[in-house]
Amino acid sequence: MKQLILFCFFGIFFVGCNKKDSTPANPLAEALQSGTWRINNFNLAGIDKTAQFSGATFTFKSNGNVSVTTGTNSYTGSWSYGYVSNPNGSQLTMTIVFTSPPVFADLTASWNANGLFPTNVTLLKISSTGSDFLSFTKN
Image 1 (cartoon, rainbow, N blue to C red):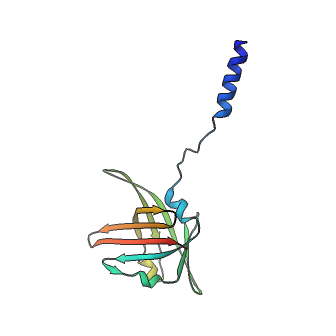
Image 2: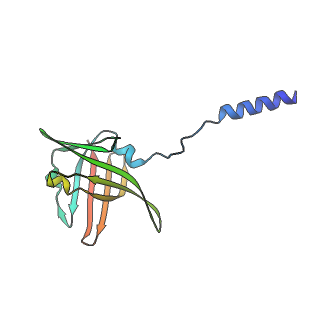
Image 3: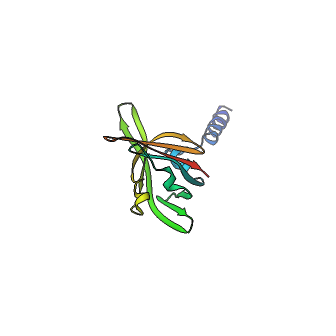
């Protein structure tokens, strides 16, 4: 009888346990890969450049590509994300790379994730020339 009780206990224990993914989900990747996005704020060295991206739709793909359509034109760049250690722990970062056209090349940088919401992602870059801001809103 004891063996039957032990067998049932361990059977329930092992059935009740399910293996969890050891890699935590990245909230930045989850947000950006779900749908298309537009820039609603881009401030570079104190200059508002948001209007230059009017009508541009960004699609962040899981393979590290980001595609942009502006009317009949399409451009491809790359993006990645990760964590950088700092004295307060770790900072979620995003790197964007575009080689052309020049207006999109302005986005090329490593950005710190400053705000992550299902419909808005805010990024910040601090340099010797000041703070740069980039914000995407979900379409």
